[in-house]
Image (cartoon, rainbow, N blue to C red; front, side, top):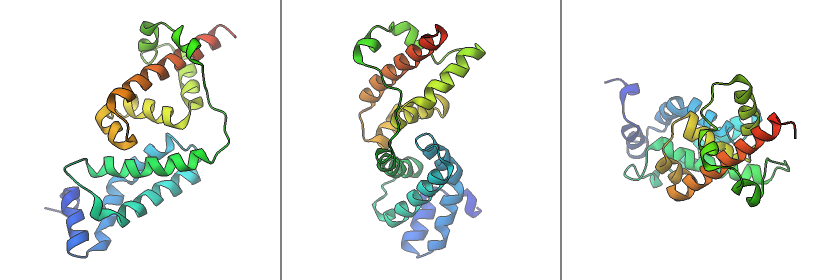
Length: 189
């Protein structure tokens, strides 16, 4: 079995218990691109995203003894670290995100909101993409990871330290927000 065929846990044990610190690079190689993509859902400036992804690997290495394979995959644990670093980063930014009040969201029909992500119409896809880019980073992350990366609600709950049911409710509200944005743009308001 080659080193690239090993499980994450085998690599981690070799790093921790045999002192083969250089083998951590195998995990960086394995998850680097994926983690960078994860980070860019919250941080759109490439240089900042690269730095945050790198910082996530460094922080994970420093906390490697705390990793518990029975609680989550290494990648999910790594994303949890990256998520917290990204939250700290975006809180320091002064950007205006797409927000809507409860009254506006309550007026959006549930059925319409549920279907907003299912479209073939090029104009709607363009507006949907535009709306997703304008979402606050935490909402953009949920949409991106759930719909485009097929990350489960339970994994996202572990990453964000939020109950899966709460995330499902947030996704519903985000879909309503996206729908309202699209309808407003289509009707020129």
